[in-house]
Image 1 (cartoon, rainbow, N blue to C red):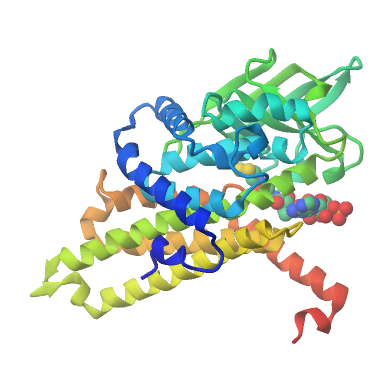
Image 2 (tube, protein in one colour; image 1 turned 180 degrees about the horizontal axis):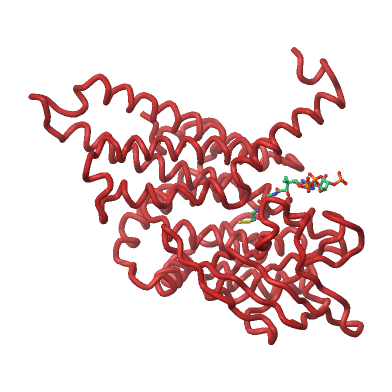
Length: 398
Ligand code: COS
């Protein structure tokens, strides 16, 4: 059976992963159903606070800053997202954004920035966000147009806008990518941490989406930010964004895996209990064919997600190709698994309040955010083409 318990027996995992998964699963089962659901901001804040209080946000930052392990343990991040997504999409979102919204600080921030921003995020006391996308620069990051220009020796002034920013409106800080102009395109970007209450930063509008979570468009109007808040050096912004996404893209795959496993669980429940044609749904061979396809897709996704995570944890400098493959396959497969689950539920599948209807709305954005499937295809193919040009038959032949 393609369950998480079975997966945890694979050689990708250590005992500490199994212990973490057992603790988080028990907590999620017990706690998440009682958290508020109605107002999306309050619901998200409540999940950040509850996760933080229970210590489950610790994997999002290093141990030296109230975190769990010395550096990122991508397998733990993936397990957390898979388990939370299985139970509650907004809890997964809350966890993921604490990581994505501090990942660049962990990887490229100086000591002062890490001391200031990481511990309160790990404790669930402050909320983090990652502000990369713009109206004219989503997939094409190198086209972003928000600028930062020097303002005296110690500050920069940021002007422009960011959109589809998760946690926009409730975050305490934003990691903001801007054009600083050291060179054209990707080589002329830099990254700054901007506190939400900095004068000149405002929420232009809130965005409502099919699976509700906090999302907004941000406006920067002569927003003055200390140079001390810069991550890495001038011109490092693109590299910082990509290195951060390298880690978090496999975790998007893990969240999709959690949604898919839940859909499969709901499908099996339905197939064994729904009576029709003098038997159960699961007696029908067409239903069995659907179940088999879903099992194959869940297992394939799990292998790719945890292979990417295990490779990064083993010390690989970059897992760009593996992470892209994991994200693409896991999110696309999850969409198919959930669609089948809806179909096998009949009219109930599109009824509000039924779990598979919620999953159907939850999964869609994952095929778009942190690099749409189309971008992952570019990344995967480019990696292979590069490797082949560099080494020819020796690398891609046998
Ligand atoms: N880690 C470190 N450096 C990286 C990198 C990575 N993962 N990926 C690329 N780089 C470097 C490249 O090596 C290159 O440097 P050199 O010229 O010195 O070799 C530089 O960055 C530019 O890379 P590239 O030429 O691949 O840039 P492109 O403009 O062609 O962009 C894609 C490529 C499409 C892959 C990129 O824009 C992307 O990932 N887009 C999706 C963005 C996204 O996920 N948005 C969602 C935001 S969060 S919801």
